[in-house]
Length: 87
Image (cartoon, rainbow, N blue to C red; front, top):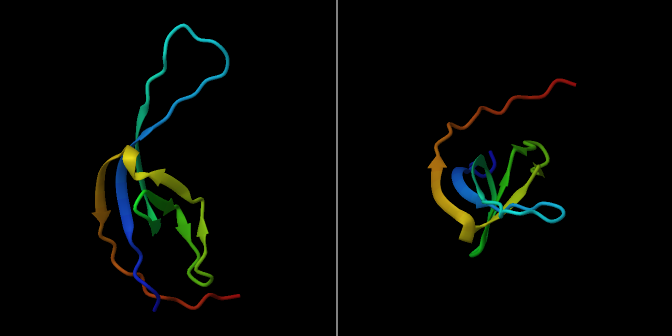
């Protein structure tokens, strides 16, 4: 069995951008994300939507600066039994 999967639920502030000139400024959006923790550094969290059980590779990774994270909670997940894949 491999390393346990760590799942995290975060709330963070996303930046906004637009093309061209505008009369009023944009605000930031508050976003909630839940994902598999890929990597944590002193400045960032990297989350993934999916993990390949056989290959250990991740899909759809998002890297979020810790400076914009307003809340973080660990999500408890029960380990799944490993099954043999039928080809």
